[in-house]
Image 1: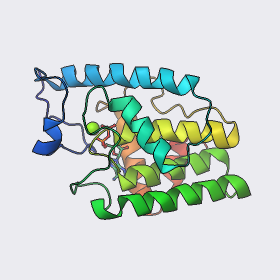
Image 2: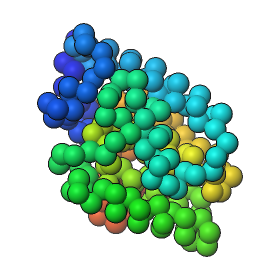
Image 3: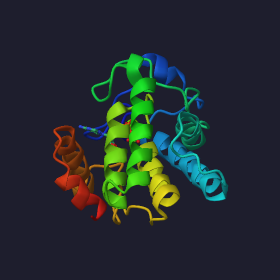
Length: 197
Ligand SMILES: Nc1ncnc2c1ncn2[C@@H]1O[C@H](COP(=O)(O)OP(=O)(O)O)[C@@H](O)[C@H]1O
Ligand SMILES: [Mg+2]
């Protein structure tokens, strides 16, 4: 049994205040927490499939999406991170960095700056690099990128997991984290290949 704090490589640990936000009292293992989060994410996906608005590139939607994906498990879901992490910008600049990203992503779609999958890969990487929330940023930013593809390009979603489970260490996750780390240095080739460009 793995402890609740056992995170795979490339994940961000929660600080004690954030841990306090867990809505279930008796969760002790990582497996239990993953199961609760997974059930919540699935109900969030149902909400997405029913929504009509096309507002993916707004701060309100980015936060609402996080709340829909994680709000049954975490009290702080949908609210920005207040603490520093090993990944992510200074918490004080999350809102402004997010605004810039959403404006850039709108521009890319309006001007066909990149192919749809390239734009989605850049959007995903920049969003997860900002790391707006205490946890769930990877899952949230993958789903957000898929909604961006659908709403702004009429494009199918990325096959992120490719038959694997991106939440556990395996070759697919290693390739994913390596691709994000290369993108951190401005080298997007691995990430483009990963999303199927
Ligand atoms: N070097 C990196 N640069 C950018 N993003 C990263 C890097 N390393 C990890 N990530 C992203 O951060 C995510 C982990 O953050 P976390 O908030 O725990 O999300 P989740 O709980 O959905 O896994 C990874 O899935 C990945 O998307
Ligand atoms: Mg996590």
